[in-house]
Length: 263
Image (cartoon, rainbow, N blue to C red; front, side):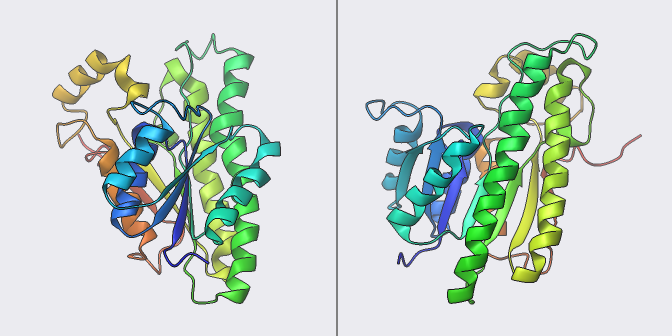
């Protein structure tokens, strides 16, 4: 049995997932990170770059190949974590995608809608279901454990973007999934949280950088800057280390103040 608490972070090979993994390591977690892209020979990007970054901090990182949209692979993913570490203390549902092409809501295709639902919502929901069952069993033999589950949603869970409706809907569904699991798992002492990032500088937002630069400069974000993966990572780490023990179901927005109602 591993002495450190163990986290599984989906989509850990880049962007927000990578930032979360690094901050969790700084808080004393061992991290298993999964991604659909698995390139052991690539030290410049992806899971194995993240592994090297974690190890440079003195931490442990287990890279695992996994497609979150494929429900048949969830058990193997959780088995890989347990075989290596013998425990699971934290699941971070971070893996997610944006539409390949932004289309007006009147032109949204079924193919794009289904793709985002499968990855962003359906995959996270059923992985959480399996992980929660595992955590419930582990609590029976280790009642002092403080297991937790974090859903990474988006400000798009509450604000409309008609040019990427399927993304907004998938994140709104993920927000409700966090609430439902928080409600159901409270009796077992399993905390469930939602972290809602705003405009974060990642590969996903690189294609619309100029557009968001203008919006930020125009006052959309009160703090007047982009968010970074480490901003989200620090929020997840604060939740993971037990700083909010009486707040299951908490929604923590990391958006530079975009949630402030303003005139």
